[in-house]
Amino acid sequence: MLKKIFISAVLLIAVLSFVVSLLGGNNGGKPQVAVGDRVAVININGAIVDGAGVEQTLLGGTQAATSGQLMREIRDAAADSSVKALVLHINSPGGSVTAAEEVGRELERFKETTQKPIVTSMGDQAASAAYWLASYSDVIYANSSTLTGSIGVYMPYMNVEDLYKKIGVYTGKIKSGPHKDILSPDREMTAEEREILQGIVNQLYDEFVAVVANGRKMDPAVVRELADGRVYTGKQAQELGLVDEIGNYYDALEAAGKLIGVNGIPEIKEQPVARPWQLLFEARLQEFILGQLENALSGAAAEAQQPVPQAER
Image 1: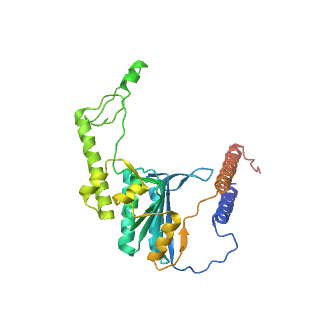
Image 2: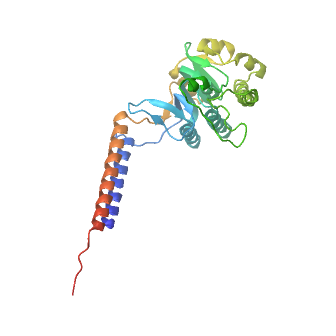
Image 3: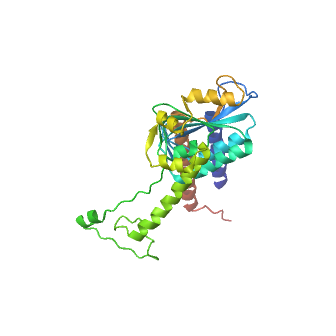
């Protein structure tokens, strides 16, 4: 019985792999041919967060841009000899400093190891951590109405001690050190704790300023004057030296093409986005297979508990 279950599981997994490959593969009947010089487009949509994969909704939208996925795409572009430039297509309000630092390091490595240009196209917004990433570009395009900048760092916290008292909730904790519960919302922050956290914020802010100053080839003192956390329109950012050109995504693609000697819009390499029905079908198929395996195992367990007839001489 266990042998049958194992064989069934292998067959079901094989079917799943085949169907998924059909969903994500080249099924349009177009032959695979050699490609010429092209640009790799990295889409950065939503908040920039630490993580391994793409966070998509069932309707096909992107919830967040994860550092793991972005780093893989950048490395894949660096390893592809047909890719001659990178285009960052950004529509993000910002996100995690650590995630931006991780992705920024890969962008820096891409430039150092390949000597290939990076062009950024800003959509509705490319602020805070998103501008951190844009700073690694050789050319930045933005729309006049794009919201960008927001160069700075903050650390949120709240104090709900009085609220707890009103509803009769009293908390306590046993801790190994005086600062183990720093940022605890059930008590007032001490002056010493505020100094500790301000030091962390200041360090991260200094790193942000250094990234912008280095990428935009600006005096750090000038960047600090601009980096008070405010957002700028694309037009304002251009006047301040934070953006190079006013233009849309296709203007940025054409500019990338010129940098690699291609007239017009170059050929594009882009990470495919799964269609909503594909996500739904794959989820349903996985649920079906797991259900079949669970039923088979339950049946085997029940059968094992039945008395086995003995052959008597």
